[in-house]
Image 1 (cartoon, rainbow, N blue to C red):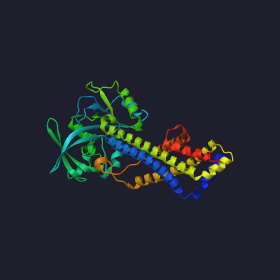
Image 2 (image 1 turned 120 degrees about the vertical axis):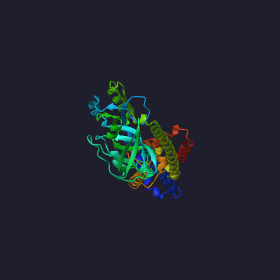
Image 3 (image 1 turned 90 degrees about the vertical axis):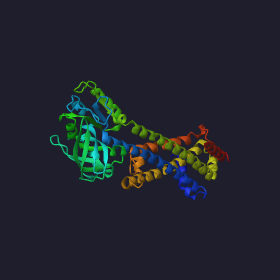
Image 4 (image 1 turned 30 degrees about the vertical axis):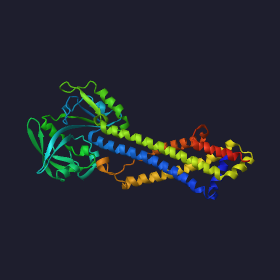
Length: 420
């Protein structure tokens, strides 16, 4: 039997009978650890959830990787490439690549009776994956794109439709300016909302057949390919793989094909998201320090509360090392108790936030209407394991530190151990 652990258990069971002024402080120690764990889990879940939500919305408009004509055209209009590429069969079966679809873009102007607004028409084909827009659909439906018959149905954002005083099923005229102005009429089949104003205000989803006709392309000519992958963490590796497979690919006019990941297409957004990690690191460090200092105070109170017991055990021949281990067992119990409460509170809050969206955000500033939380069991386990390890090891090796609190607690302990 482990005598030190047995004595620590007896001390723990008799804690309720301790001195009245010690129990509130011990409870505060448990509460502080619980709050530290809660804040650490919540910080990581909110930041990862926010990054994931913004990232998924940007990818929904532009895919993970784009393959386009490598030219000097910096406009919003894509250049022509052939739909039938030799690399496509091998690329579609590459591990990690989920889906490949064609697209083309062309700028134009929507004109109503009172307003004119420039937008980017994104033409999609029959292979387009509507999952993203179905998830953000506010009214109406997505439309079917056929390879044989063009449809005049389109999708607009609620923001753009409201600004132009357009509603679901309304028809409107759109003008395209090339060598000469040309007009097309479209009908709103669906309204979506992503809260990413940069995209909502300028993106209209339409049949790629309209862009092919406006550009005098045949049915086998497109503006590029959008590549979706299974795991965002593999985007750099898969971008390199796609570039390697396209190394010897050329367009019909002898040009080269260009491969860009979403991080290269929108570096300002992903650089901003990357900066959020620094905030999490600072919060974690502060919470670790708070938890450590709090446990130092807690163990000092435990020592002061057990002065008589320390003297009795010392009289019975208990060594200083054993006495320290007894109090470390008690500290370990307090840490576990605080961590359990912290996890329970964090999980409860995340479930409620995901279901009811209790905390809202300003969409104009944060692009999201509510605080997103990412429930990741691995993150929670790592936070708990690292917290428990750091706090406990800091206490075990306190004699080797220059921390005033630990020197003070050890001085008190030694004083009590030498009492008799």
